[in-house]
Image (cartoon, rainbow over all chains, first blue to last red; front, side, top):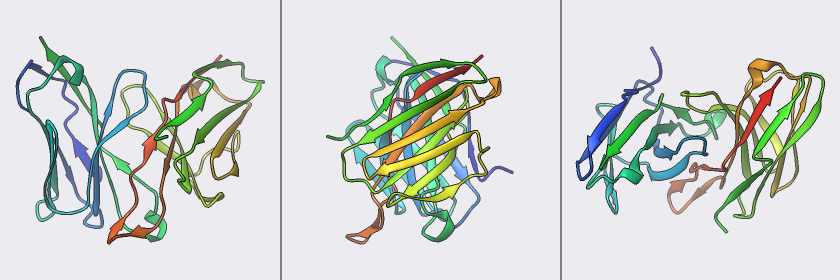
Amino acid sequence: QKEVEQDPGPLSVPEGAIVSLNCTYSNSAFQYFMWYRQYSRKGPELLMYTYSSGNKEDGRFTAQVDKSSKYISLFIRDSQPSDSATYLCAMSAVGGTSYGKLTFGQGTILTVHP
Amino acid sequence: DTEVTQTPKHLVMGMTNKKSLKCEQHMGHRAMYWYKQKAKKPPELMFVYSYEKLSINESVPSRFSPECPNSSLLNLHLHALQPEDSALYLCASSYLGLAGGGYYNEQFFGPGTRLTVL
């Protein structure tokens, strides 16, 4: 079993839809959670970063973390064609040999069509 | 400046060549990373430098040789690569340590170098 599971999709939605992207994890040492967006043939771009359970909002994006269920989500409201990309969840533990190591999900390919 | 830059954007090399990838950041980050990414896969960590010292080597073959000349620069020296080493090579950087009750581990990625080994 992978430490981080992410549905690879692909996910196709109409413009304006609410998109929900999810990851589950098995390592209870993970304390920090990130979502990256990666356009084709580009580097990943950090969208959201959180280290506590609950919701964090930034514009059309909301990151949700439920540590008791080991489940994280990214919601995109009013999705746009420019949101079409691969979305990667990533997480890390604290200190020791885990320092600096991100564990990524497999990535979900999202297409928003006009 | 909130950018990580990488050069070159594209590189084609033969199996006997020696080449280098370069990465630069001016955000004051003291951790820098090399990742390898194959198509439709997430990035795989190769090396981590903390305060210009190599702190993590993820059992990377010796044909990849990292170097951190100063806190802003990171190089990856390539020699005698194999065709299966063709991939997107990503550099990232982050702050280190604790501050304000939080723990820095947000990593900022560069655009990558697309490497093809013939």
